[in-house]
Image: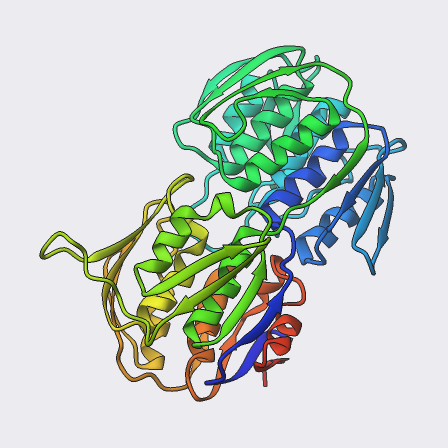
Length: 433
């Protein structure tokens, strides 16, 4: 079931409880391998990448117990064993690379598929991760389509300066540093909310980390990490997605949000399209007075811009959601992806709805919004929130549309269709004909 059929034109109304952030859950799951003590995790989402990692744990001999009704996960890696000759980490998800540090720390070796990948966002090199592994004393070599990472001695502390504030590379550094005996520092560290959540989990297990939420992390490693209990926060990406769906359809969607402190810049970006976000009593909602409209900048002769880059910039993963708003809003806006070189290649699909967009270069796009749109059949690339952005536009248009290859949504958002139906959308999964 890979395609989404939607009959649009209905304003979405109701309440949504979002799931946890995939990009917090996956590194936390990888980090659990650093301890042989029992752990309990609350709010683990039912998404494909989680299922794959849990299957790896079972293959390695870990005790994995998941309560499907409460999404509470009990893990115990006491009897875990890794054999580089037969155990392989799945190449379908980029988060596999975060299993390397705990395997290296516990077993002295890890094997990773050479072409590990995630969403199709352009070239995503693994060299920064290789630099991290080598910096801590690991030896990296290619072997028959795989990367072998070995360490004959315990990991040693290091001081490293990233050339780019990469989320996954930062998390790999913290994983290695927690296992290394001594003090390690990372400059130009990523600081996204999901990185902060991951670091808080590490601290719960006993890791000594300073600088959480800043661009410089100090980790004093070597202590034996223990077990414990941890509850995941709501995903700020999913919160924003449902707020945007309410806004684009002219409805009233209220989303649970326990971390409104992450939203000032996201709120101001919504305001650029005439949408006001209200946070009250642990819930958030999007309000608009009249049609969506791009707000005119105070400075003359410039376009309203949405510039996406590493946190605390506007989150790059949310850019497609706001491109959808730009297509539907009266006025023109520029969208600038400062991270991925292949992340805007899908925008030609927007013309199938009748939208007018112009690609300035691989990183910048201008929408000329407010034009009449019609239902369409569109193809989504393998990018989670592009599939959602195409769905958003379809949901705002009277009539039947189809989003083909929409399965990436399942990588991050459990019960996405069920939540939409509860808000009044007529939507269903279907197979290729």
